[in-house]
Amino acid sequence: MQLHLYRIESLVKGEIEIVFLKDIIKEHKGFGKQIMMLAKTELVKTYKGAAIGPGWAIVKPAFTIFVYWFAFSVGIRHLGTVHVDIHGHDLQLDRFLFMFVGFIPWFFISDSIVKGAKDIRSHRQYVTKVNFPVSTIMTFSTISRFYVHLALTGLMYIYVAIFWGVSWYNLQILFYMPAMFLFFLFLSWSTAPMCAFSPDLENAITSVMSGVFWLTGVVYNSYDLPTPLRQIMLFNPMNFFINGYRNALLYDRWFFEYKTEFVIFLVEFIAVFLLGVYNYNRLRKKIPDVL
Amino acid sequence: MDSFFQNMHRRKVDMNSEPIIVLKNVSKTYTLYKNDSERFRALFKKPKKLTTHKALDNVSLEIRKGEAVGIMGDNGGGKSTLLKHITGVTFPDEGEIHVNGMVAALLELTAGFVLEMTGRENIRLKGYILGLKDEEIDKIEENVIDFAELGVYIDQPVRTYSSGMKMRLGFAINVNISPDIMVIDEALAVGDASFKTKCKAKIRQIIETGVTVLYVSHNASSVEEICERSIFLKKGKKIFDGPTKETHLVYLLDKRKSQIAQREKKIKELKKVIDNAEDKSLLIDEQETLDNHIAKVETFKKEIADYEIKLENFRKEHYGDKAVDSDQ
Image (cartoon, rainbow over all chains, first blue to last red; front, side, top):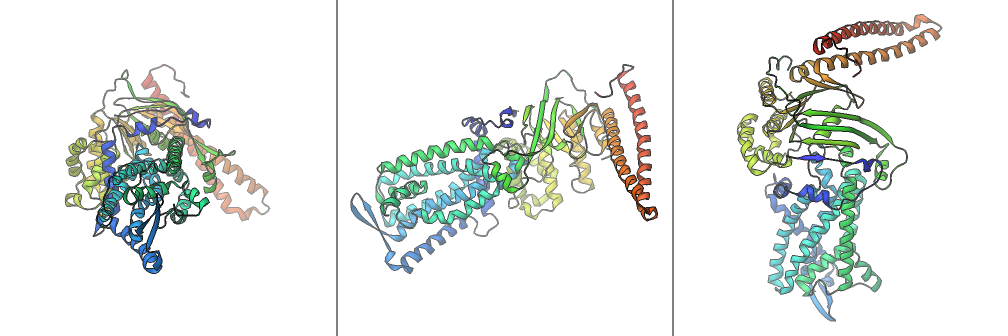
């Protein structure tokens, strides 16, 4: 059924071969159905045993959004409206709608970063007990997080459709969603094997995440900042997705319209991908020894 | 266990058949990090000084389809490392491994269970982890449930199971996936006495169907019952590979020799202490230990002589009058 054949002299000598994607593709081949089932299992694992079960996937983010909305619109009253500059004219948006659209991708992003880094460590029995295609762990975990994201996006879209309206620009979601999925999957190819090596990195990631939230334009408009900051924010790939969801659903703007932003994102996307392949191949064979 | 496998029908192994497991000059060195921060730093740059432990040292072996091979050796000899390489969990630093078939390991029976899911769901999950397709799992599901004897509990979450029930379910899954190679590591202490008997019967049945078996046990007699051939590993090196009886004698000889060496070292130390002491009457305890050690060494020496005779007899019987080099 399986035939393994390894030649790993190079690891001993400290030379690192980048076998571009070959290993990862090989691990995924013929495993598609299993990946989908394991993704489902992940969801079951998370929500089973609780009375409202999958309801928690919605309750938790709903409460978070409510709290931030309360703080901004009720607590600090004059922040109830967001002004966005679209092609020179001022677009007035309800703070809740603005935050709602920003928070939905953010939930997926923060979940993917924090939990994605733990993917291998939290599935250590797959690595140390059985011969398992390790890279698929990241795939099925990310898919299971993506399911939650799909459900939340669906709910959000209903709200947007009712209170803001629909347009052809909304279709861009179909570009942003898979791009976001891939970006954070590739990111976990780096972070998960590294965190398997050392939990320090995992703690570091968890620690900085709440800071990263405020450096990302989830509750405020990152385009609306003084000049140097505004440009710096373009280098935060999370802003690309969050502003992207707003481009598609609220601003009626195409993803390629703001060229600098798009090019910076593309470069980052490729870099994350290459780093992911490099780190995964570099560490794959050492992981069972340190877990 | 003991005499359970006696009178078992021994299969004939075609020694010209394709080997199912091949190891060519396999070495494995574990890096031992001094502390967590050293391991963290190793992520980014190669540390200069490293403490290493050679778990496998240039091991080569071939196992043919249908063979039952025992693996002997003390703790730290490299037995589990060898099995981990064969199951494909760990990767060698040097050398090549070819494994041609599906491996089932009776090592960690309960690994990978999700406590919140039912027994039935866990069968499916474990099947997926082992790389089975839905149809294959459907085929074995009923057998597993029957074998595990869980009754109505099969549709309850695994978290409600007793540890014995979990073991039974794990065992049932592993033996029912019809593997080509089965790795058994003394995992036979499953559940109560009657279930234990059932497990052993199942293992026997599997062995008789011609599945390749790798068997690790500290109990030499049970190895002898199952395996015609055995491998003796010591400090990661393959010391001996041959008929189980011979391997066992070689193993015992080696063990006694190293025990004698250990005791003699202690005797030397004690003698020094006693000789240097001014008031020898205060060292009654030491004197007693010393006498004990000396007596033990004597017994070991007798045992060694005994084993050597047995080994010689076995070789005469087994290989005829051809002289056999004792350090094969």
